[in-house]
Length: 205
Ligand code: ITT
Image (cartoon, rainbow, N blue to C red; front, side, top):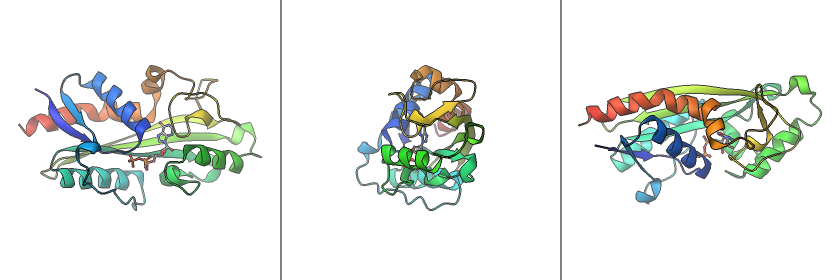
């Protein structure tokens, strides 16, 4: 029997990754329901100070609004030279929410005079599950790498075209979906949370 789970994100890139990663981890066990099924749910105000706070807030508010268990993530790019920025502000770094091209251009501009050895960065993903009875589970993971000097690659989303994973000489936007999922922050956090999702959903009956 598969259990309904609300996929509490409006980011199309994330939706694709959640669906394919959870399908591998829990084949046939979870029926992911999109936010389009709950048109009255309002956007969550992401006013937490950490990825953890925001991820849990998204999952909790979407669960409470829909009445079914919800999974969400809060994620972003953390650049060493920028003291961890854009971090939790990654989706709106250049001003308008979800403008990947402008966000990427802003980071490249901020990093234009920074030498190769100081271009370290990582993605963080905090995945959060929230159940109608108030139980929750959170998993966090990182994806280490460095910043390129110009966007390259057509896959992925967000900052992928300027992110070179550690040990590679291509951007994460040049990787296949399978390659990225195997080493990414979202791949790792969703693989960690998947067994807890299955156990907790089953406990609801
Ligand atoms: P939801 O809150 O609806 O999930 P969002 O895009 O607002 O969507 P976040 O606040 O978590 O989500 O922002 C995440 C941003 O971090 C996202 O817009 C990208 O710019 C970046 N990001 C996260 N994961 C990424 C990945 O795997 N590849 C590239 N960029 C990523």
